[in-house]
Image (cartoon, rainbow, N blue to C red):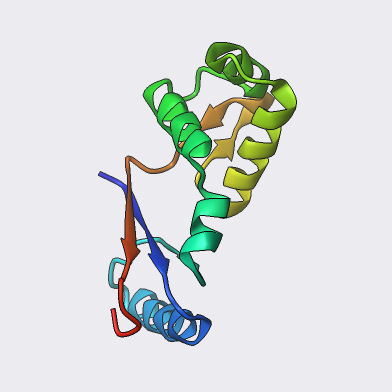
Length: 119
């Protein structure tokens, strides 16, 4: 199962985690892909409920839909779907293949959001 971990952390902690990951990868160790956000607000702005719904739909139908077909299937406006697909593509959570066919490179998204500063 291919997974990505999404974390909410301060930028200084994200930098430390990135350096740690780089060292692990350089040493040939397996590293889990990660995305970091500076706040819960930033996370929920980038990964909305509609975008998660879109990811699930595409993941269940890997490689069978382009953006226009996805908009039709979900009953949503093409422009809004295009905006969501572009945002998710920038985050690496969705990919456009040949002829614009959409795929999701992960089977699982794990979100970590500590409740305290130390978490």
